[in-house]
Image (cartoon, rainbow, N blue to C red; front, top):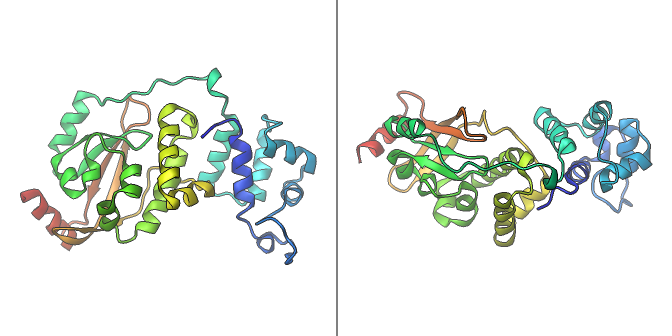
Length: 270
C-alpha cells in the first residue's frame, strides 16, 4: 500500500460505484467502465475534464477546498467519506512526515481495564490489541493483548463463527480501519496488515477495493454466537485515550436486564 496517489485512488473508487441514473445522467449498455466516467464527474463538479484527470492520475495534488466541496457533492459523499476525502487530499509522501508509533498503554489505563466488570480492551489505530481484561478474552480470543482484530476477523475460523452477521461486521471493520490509518497509510504496520490480508483473504480484497470509510466510534450493536453461552447482542463504546495517539478504550456492554446481560454475568462467573 502506498500513499503516492491516495486521492486519485479514492476518487476513482467512488466514481465507479455511482450509477449514472442516480445523478440524472443517461445510462446505456455500451459503457466500458463501471459507474461514472471521468468527464461526467468533472461535469457534475463544475471543473474541466482535464483538471479532473490530473487529480485522478496524481499529477495535481493541491485541489482547493472549493474543488473538494464540488467533488464531494458530485460523488454524493456522506460526512465520513467527505472527511476522508480531505484527509487523503492533504496527505504527503512519507519522506516529508514521520510519526512514531506508540505500542504501549499507560499503566493507569491498564489498571482501569482490569478493574472493569465488562469486556474491555485497548486498541491502537491499526486495531492491534494492547491491553485487555479477562472477561474480554473470555468473550473472544481476538480481544487479548498481542492480537490484531483484522487478522483474527478474516483469518481465524472461530472468529468468523462468533459473528453470525460476519459479512456486515467485516464491511464495517474494514471501513473503520481505512479511516483510522488514513494518516499513516504507508507506515510499516499498515503495509504489513494490508499485504497479508490481501494475499490471504478474498473478502478483505473486495472490501479494501471499495474505499469505504466510517468513523471508529459510534458503532451499532453486534450479535455474537458464543460457543458456551449462545447468542448475545452487545453494544460497544469506544473512548479516546488521552496521550497515546490513535488508542481507544473499547467496552462491550449489554442492555441492562436483558438475556445478554444474564449471559455476560454468567461468563464473568466462569
